[in-house]
Image (cartoon, rainbow, N blue to C red; front, side):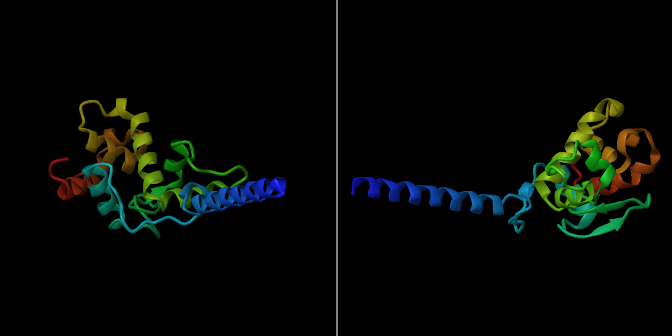
Length: 164
């Protein structure tokens, strides 16, 4: 009798553990589950201004930028940027395009990616403010701080965040 009770408790605990794991994985944007994107907690004011400048902070959708590159999600992140930040959240066997879209539509993933790319190229932006570094490398890649083509984007971000 005691063995049956212990076995039932064990099975109930195992069932409960599996149920909790399923619920957690459904809400994890990195594993392809649903995400609560109704409220965005911005990492800083610069990223908030960039999000507004790029997409109006709209999670979904893609569009071509002035350089004719396809960008998607909150920051209109392009696939080259996604590859430069080492493809976060990409599952084994998953094609890079699917992982890129999922990351670009997740604020946490895309903002981390943008900050990681900026960190990689920060030495090329010597003397620039942190926000200018983020903005111009986001818009122009590795040489974003060295080209005049990124100044208009930087000016737009500064309009949205004068103290950045």
